[in-house]
Image (cartoon, rainbow, N blue to C red; front, top):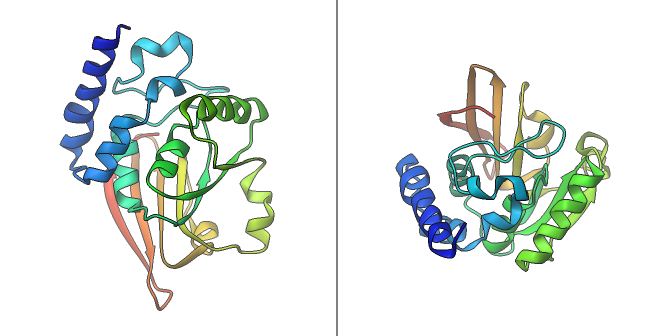
Length: 208
């Protein structure tokens, strides 16, 4: 892909996929514009780096669609210094966006080779401050110790509720997740109030 066509595709991704989904936060749009998505996509998918599809990763996993990434990042409202837990490092693209928005990121990936790929991608793109951990989040010490986070981003869908993860939220914390079963799945945001009350907001129907 030529430099011109790449930038044109990046512009179209923002204007035709992400912004029409009511993603209007300028920080999020600038982050998605300036974080080089093509560096997080395998060589076989370079022509589709900015397309409205789930790009395959290892073992049947996929990257989120650009519009899903935009909806998630806007909903999480990441502030500089927020302690962020990402569940599913994947290619590392969302990790890079979380870092670019000012988050202090701990990211879990269960697949060793995928973790190594994400580490290389992040280094090539100039992002090396994330704490990348190989392991099963459900067996992680932070779960057992109930470590607290300002932001939790689940980059894969879950079938059940997110109670395990809401227990890890600080007061004022935000959790994004996609849940349900095909063909009906929803993206939702859970916010924990200062009194510990959990407020759930369904953002849109989607598939992952």
